[in-house]
Image (cartoon, rainbow, N blue to C red; front, side, top):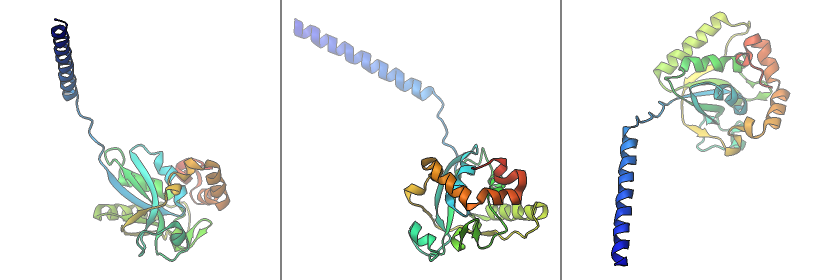
Length: 219
């Protein structure tokens, strides 16, 4: 008799569990699916990649920024090799963004006041081709938008020197070593010391005035 009672109790428990599971599945199916954000990619070089992540990370619509190397002729380069100047690569950042929330043109509006577009030999205290500023376009639309942006800047720039920033086709982007990613967050004191010592903000302010770094102090 006791065995029959236990068997009935198990059967009842299983029925209740199955019913609850069916309700949970039904409720889940009824909820609207959260659409994954659309993703597009932009690649910019502006000297030290540590300093180029912060202004883009704060933008609504930017999904992620990655420091890395691009534009050269060596596969899987290391920081040591790139910084020596022998690979042809630039220090650069790759920006993943949602084009429904922010446009490529808006990214360019952040790019320009965070670089020295008059310097063909590097950026700030970092000298050499690996530290030059550049825009790497992924398709024809990005090329046209970049060139129009540069032309508009040339017509309205607040400084007298010519703009020498390159606009070139994108090539393979190699993420930098993990310790370079989000360096300004992982090592804020060292980052601020480097940035100040390199004279980046002083030069940006001399070029762009109140709009330097999009109007925000980066110190």
